[in-house]
Image 1 (tube, helix red, strand yellow):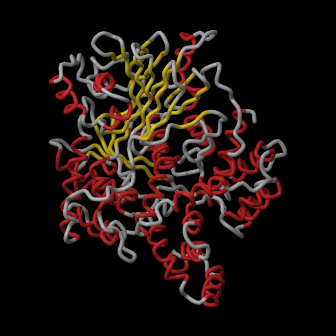
Image 2 (tube, one colour; image 1 turned 180 degrees about the horizontal axis):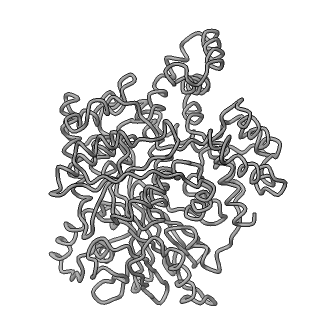
Image 3 (tube, helix red, strand yellow; image 1 turned 120 degrees about the horizontal axis):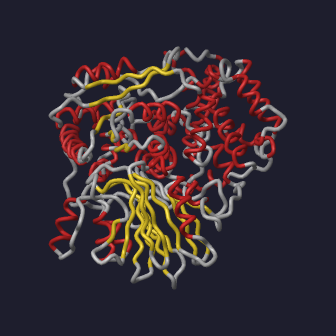
Length: 624
């Protein structure tokens, strides 16, 4: 894992000074080496975290005669097969590093064909001196980020926005339209960012620019499932589970290739536990596992579950108990994300990655199981919207009124979830789904925004409409894969791990496993309240039955309590002070009402307040 950056050269810019600034800005992503390839029309650079070919893979990496150079962030899992093919076709490879295959593939075909040959998590840049062509590429799901600014012949890119801003020709201006999108989702949907003119290269895309043509973005991967794969569908859940198990084992094995120690982040949930179980069966040594817990945070500590899994597989288990400085972490998280990021689970993930990095430079995680196999309760809720709306309206109104009077502990602790479902379901899909994923309700967003702008919601609905011919569960999974996965889950995984130069690999997002999962009938994923049926069946012999039956528990923090306790003063000093930056962009009275309702206990607005605090920290840092 690394950081990459670069730009096309233009008159009046000191290229050496700029590339040095870009390398400094991404030093946390690659502490082991740095280097740059300098062509006549572009410079591309890399901060390297050495994982494969520790001595021979340092940048810059070029083709045989040095007329093309490559930098890459990530891992190419099929690099050994590609090395064999390239050697057979006469290419001379000088390293054992996976990055080198990219520059030789670039010699053989166009950008689209190049990217299609790669299986992995990656963002790369290739400069071809003879063709005077720069090619940027991003993996199919957006595991590895790449941001860019384009203005005529100038293009500036980097793994993080801070590297793009290091170039003197890149303006630093706020895009006001990012704010309403951020309030809804806790992120700005790709390809937009908080900065005017700076965009993110979408997943499954390549960007090409030459001296004679402007920048062009092309999609090389269609995320829609194949119409007919030619393979017979599984006849039973058991048959599908056996295939999933085989594919999962192969995915884990591919991610165990490294010349450095590898561990695993273990939450005690089905997904990370399954990964650890498969790792234990493949390795001839104990797996290094890492779990985090919080002091005095009932309901947010999963150490007992992780400990049970660690004991089952006899791992070398590391538990960490922390009392996080949430205020201090907020500032650090904003710096690493370069933008506001509303998902508060970045706090424990950041701390867990920091602590794991003290032991290993590479770790496997459980991200992706919910996305592939239907693991979020909102998927089951979406399937229930139709039946719920067939209940007579007066009965629905009575039920909603009754739910609003129940304490949060009612219905076995699901009182709040039942209320969110009933209130959202009245809107129908996809607006119900949007209400469930939003960090700030639509009503509060309308109150906060001086002018209502729901462009991101409109884009969300358009994405939903594009899958109208598919089964309902497939539509929700596709919407989640194209929005929440690349813009929230994978951004969080990248920034919190690379903040500490920890490479995080996700076997459950393996390309072969993804293709198979998307080919399965919805009934194999969710039936009634049972989520991830086929994945649970696939690992039923590995994991304790009580873990398989356990209700999904997010990797969260006690925001509601924090904002009434230790963070109350910080909240008021930041959001309610006359000089607060958010008050220049949002309606101050609405901010004060949300904070007051939360402080009094009338409503729980913990997620909304964290979203606003993160926005304040960003605006304050930028002086906007």
